[in-house]
Amino acid sequence: MYNSFIKSVKFSLIIVYLVIAAGSIVRMTGSGMGCPDWPKCFGYWVPPTERTQLDWKPNHLYLKGQVIILDEELRVAKNDFYSGFDYNPINWGFYTQHDYALFNPYHTWIEYLNRLLGALAGLAILVMTVLSFLSKKKKKIIPIISFLILIAMVFQAWLGKTVVDSNLLPYRITIHMVMALLIVLGLIILLFISQRKISPIPASQLMKTLSIFAVALTLFQIGLGTQVRQFVDLKMHLQVSQWLDPAPLKFYFHRSLSLIVLAIHLTLFWMLRKVNLNLKIFNQILGLIGLEIITGILMFYLDFPFSSQPLHLIIASLLFGAQSLFILRIIVK
Image (cartoon, rainbow, N blue to C red; front, top):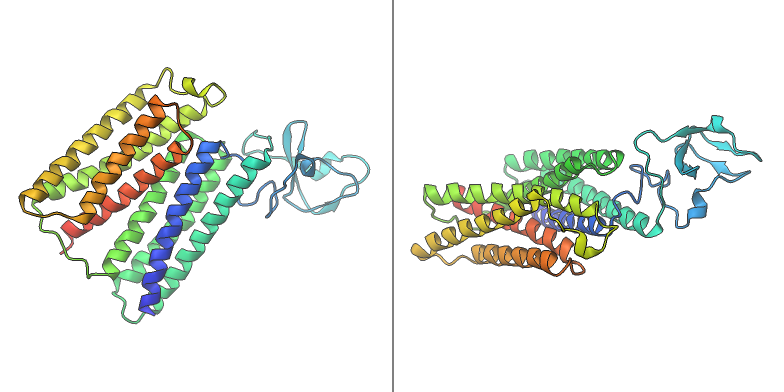
């Protein structure tokens, strides 16, 4: 049973990373409002594929919560009813969360698949939590952490609803992203505690402090990057060469901080080599930082090549995970 639990932690971590990847694709394609309501999509568990499915229809059975687009506004069925020959406004209410009333099947299905992955991640973490309580070899802290991660996942789902209801307010997107990374952190801690075969790394207090500062700075960088991304989203109707022309101040701040992150990790690398430690995990961290800087350069100087945006976020998320594991290895004895 304990081995099944460890496998469930690994599977949950992989699925959460896939959700982050899917979310980045949603952002890249501008599909965040592909489903204007939550948890359903236009009031359906399986979303429509054509615009005509959202037109009002005579002699049609409508279920409570189903959505139509009328006069460029979303209308929601108040109860189950059969429509007559004429539209009757008494059966419909206005959607009050926002005024976004566009339908694009491409955007809708990208967002819908993102939600399906999110639901799968929630199910995986639920199974993981149940197994954590059933495992006989478990440490007492394991089911507690598992349950906290499950609560975090429920909270993350609610945050997803608030992002949609707000019509993609930047600060809510940032909170949503940071919460996803905290769930990644929780899963890495759980995996680390469950597999104590990983040997600790001897480290000075300065190394520990620098490492913690580096991961905190990376987390801040990811949050700042979502703000830059929101600026780009607002200019996607222009030619790609104009998305960062002129670039906002936060972009230059974000770019400068990336060099600080690199400098801190080069310092840590020097400190590790000074004590004759050549760690695979830290070499991976440096590689991810290099890839992150390269994708940033590609986006700015080569006008956002295809897939460079989601790759930038995915690499940053992997970097955060690798940093978290490194910190655990130098702090936990």
